[in-house]
Every structure is written in structure tokens, then in C-alpha cells.
Length: 294
Image (cartoon, rainbow, N blue to C red; front, side, top):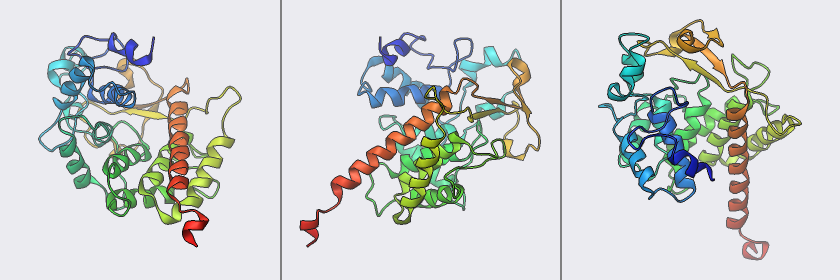
């Protein structure tokens, strides 16, 4: 059974998808399932159509997408705390993931929101992730999709920010991964590719070399995808000075949790390397031959 066929049966039709069976559906995970559907050409499936409606329902007044809605999540979340205002607000990282859905009814509104909240340095903030490379790559890709190479100002700014994050050895170093993060590097690489910087080839080469050289013998990459779990009224997790590590369940609030099985880290690297290969093929196809240049 294909992954899409399996996911179609995983939840009720109006529930979206969640990160595990015990929790309510959210717009973030549902967006990623729908990204799979679009990649497989299954966006016209009835189950996908229900998913699009679920994500679109999370559109907030500011034009962004929230992770949760009270009508779906309150019965579960209210057992932990009485109010979850921050989790019901729009999140840039969720909005950037949903903005990659071409068939989403509110697609254009999400692109407008991303333009509004891009930081002066070219990056985008994240709510659930301490690494800004993640939302920056997804936002840049969504804003660059279908636009001519010379008409990608937001993506180019994002690419310049991401390129500066990639070190001389090709690695992005973060506070949680000071020796180098394959996860952050993968998304920085995607952001550079989205901006198609003329000067970006050397940066791409370094990042690709770092990622390929750091692959483990079993085919995985060392876990470096850290997810953070802000408090229910914590609108700006970047302002928090200290995060606990590895707590689970109700105690996870205020902590960062590592992708210990390396699945998310590995999938992120594979996706980035695949995009690099596609970009290389496209560039070679578009490049004029020696005879054409003569």
C-alpha cells in the first residue's frame, strides 16, 4: 500500500491529520500530507479535498495559518491548560508549509502574508522550530514557484540570508547543534536554490559536500531536527532564554525535543539533495550549447 493510500485511511474525513493518533489534527501536519498528495498527482482525490478545506479553515484574520482550531483541539488541549491562545494564533512556519500547496483555496492570501512578515535580513521566523532555515526555505520556495528567475525578490533575499548561514565547510551551525546541523543545512540549501543566486553555486557545492560526507553508514543522518514546544500563551518563543531538553507528554511544554529516530532529519536532507539534483539537470538543460554560444 502506498503512503498516500495508508494516510487516507488514518483519520476521519473532517479531522485533518495529526502527528500521532492520540492528538487532534492540525494544519501543519495536514499541509505536509497534502504536499505528498500534490507530489503524487492525487490532489483531486476526495480525501485531499477534505484536507484542503481543513487547512483553509485555519486561516486567521492576519492572513496566516494557525496550527490548531479550538473546535478540533480544545477537548484534548483543555485537559492540560485552560487557554491556548498562542497555539490558536497564526504561525509563520505553518503558513510557509501550507503556502506550498498550489491547490489550497487561500494560497494567494498566504503568499501575501509571507511577504508581509519576511524579516529585514531575508529570513522568516518559526514558532515550532528553533531553526529559521526551515520556514525560510519553505517560504522562499512558495514565493518563487512559477515566477521568472528575475522576479523573485523575496526568495533572493532569503537565499542571501541562508547562504551566509552556510559555513566554509558547508555546515550550518546552530545553538543546539554547534558542530553542525544536517537539518538546518538542508533547509538553508533549499533556500539558496529557491533564490537562484548567481553567486550561489559555490555555497551549494559546499553544503552538498557537507551533507553527503556526513551521512551515516546505515543511510541516515545524525538527528539534528529539534522541535520546540512553547507554552499555551507563549506567542514569541524566541524570547524565551532557556529551554529544557527532551521532556515528553504534559511536561514537554517549554522544552525542545530531538528527532531521535533521525527520520525527519534524514527525510529533510534527502529532499534537499533531490532538489539540488533537479536544479542541476534544469540548469544543464537550459544552458546553451557551445554551438549556440558561438
